Picture 1 (spheres, rainbow, N blue to C red):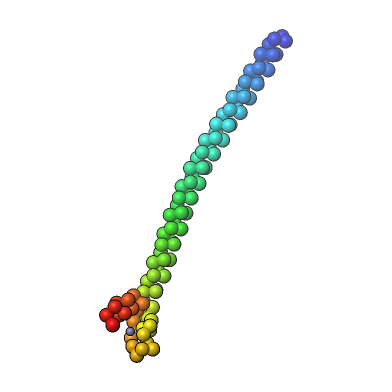
Picture 2 (picture 1 turned 90 degrees about the vertical axis):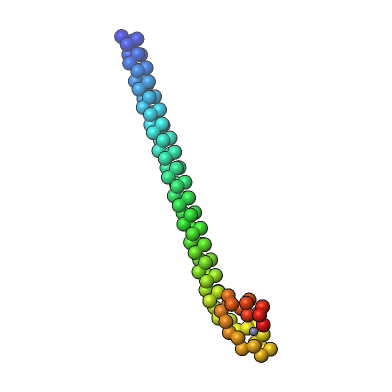
Amino acid sequence: MERRRRVMALAELQREEDQERTLRQEWARAAILEEQQSQTRQQFLDAMANSMWFNAQFVQQQTMDHYDVVCPFHHAGCDVVCARRDLDMHLKVN
Ligand SMILES: [Zn+2]
């Protein structure tokens, strides 16, 4: 009788241990999955941020290029007003 109770108790312990191990394994799997998803999210956000930054630089560059500027030699009698992107050319040929 005593021995039977001890065996039952041991079996109960074993079952609890198995349950706990299963829970730990499930938790570990969930944690790994979460980690992978968060890495994917991060990569997506990085790519997004990069393309937004690139786009902002591009727009800024375009705006600069189309901005009309007065020739730096205006005081020397040059009346040229041209787009920023054309100024280098103007200064080279004049
Ligand atoms: Zn000029």
